[in-house]
Length: 140
Image (cartoon, rainbow, N blue to C red; front, top):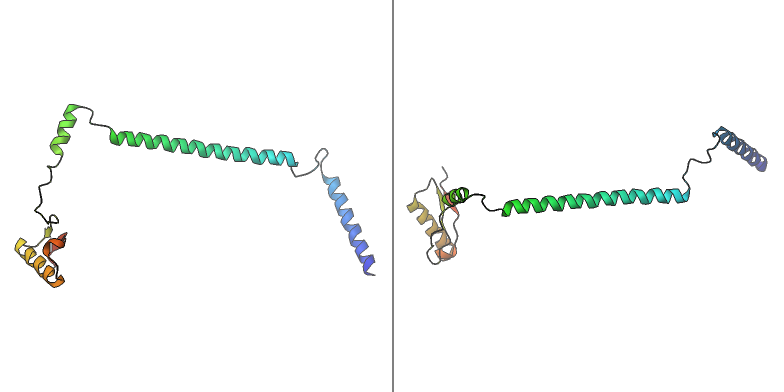
């Protein structure tokens, strides 16, 4: 009895397949591309993507070289060079031996800043010339 049911189902499936085959317009064999055509389409697609990437890389390299050339470009006229020299800061003054540079003081008296630095050096048991103070600000 189960074989009879299977035969009926198989017949219905075959009938449905025939109906679908009849509904396909004349000259159309399948909705799928043939293998050779699919491989050709894939290869052309990859080729277009890689060509686009190479062109993008070339554009980025060219723009980079232009920007580097602009940064290295010297002043165009002697007047601009003279104004650039005038605007340039003076050479840094010579620091005392063992000095770590300047300390920026914000709302602090230099005498108080010196006292704070001496206290910190004493508490850390380090010589003052081994410490580097960047700035000192009075907290109100």
